[in-house]
Length: 418
Image (cartoon, rainbow, N blue to C red; front, side, top):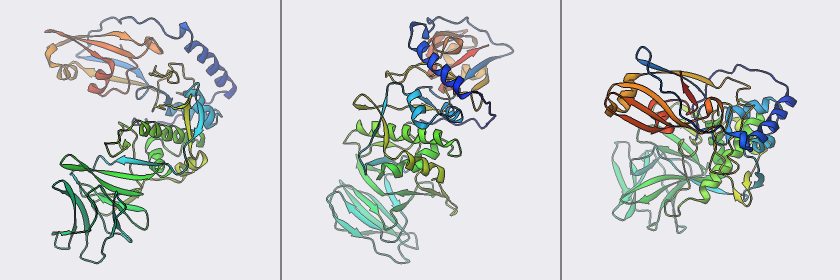
């Protein structure tokens, strides 16, 4: 869910009372018939000297919480509870069951086996409760679990680089590694390593398998929070991120398929999860958790956001450009955001050459014009681009604003063509 964060931190100070007052006023406007301007097409724009000049705002999809907005709100004096109430209106705070666990698909380990480094007390377990303590010694340089027919096999790698099969006497279900330190080091196909808290399992899938990390929800967040937001930011912003991330994970977990073998992935398609530490092939080790991030998780322990009796889908993005986007739920409301832009400007510019546009949609021929045909009606320029025409010498193609954004690498769909 995360977007790359702009690096500038130019700060503007405003009265906290004025900001809160404006927020209340903007909330009323956003929920009234005046909150959105009727959608209409923009004027078709020809290129100038072979390019189009775009002005935009925001970074990401704009649904739910703006991370820069949360930072701005915290700088203006709002608590993490007030920040969450602003970005997810109509929701309430609740708590997860103590000791909640989550299963994370480690997508980078995509070679259909699971390799781990030897460690103290390393054990292999099956889903029926069987356990095998792996032998120790200099000759065991790596352990590997892979498919063997319809079942699973265990091998060790010796100092000569040869893999030798071992019979652990375990059942035919999925096998998982655990150790005394409760941090397992996994070797990725690239040759680098990642360390993960909890256990790491080889989950059978078709003729191969997935690597899945099972750990406590709170330990999971220790990696997610600093991956999604700089934990050097104001503490209440980081706390709001911790609750939003915890809630999002719990919501996705609640809807996960029981046959997939995991609850959530580790990329921006879900939330960024990098594990406890990274270890390069050369041996350089970098711990991903931070003291400030862990403090924010502890300060909000177990807290989640609910709408009615259900867990809210607490989506978030880097910046909403001063106006959130309309999501599919009452609490993902399109509304002006007086906090996004308090710390750093959310504006951006981009020049698109006609050649880059033509390369993306070659069927149109030479690109003659771009025309935004529909906007959502919320925010500057009459809102985010919903659809846009690429008008060429051979044909015209209409694509969604999201497709145009992702194809050409724009920060958001909140832009105008100058």
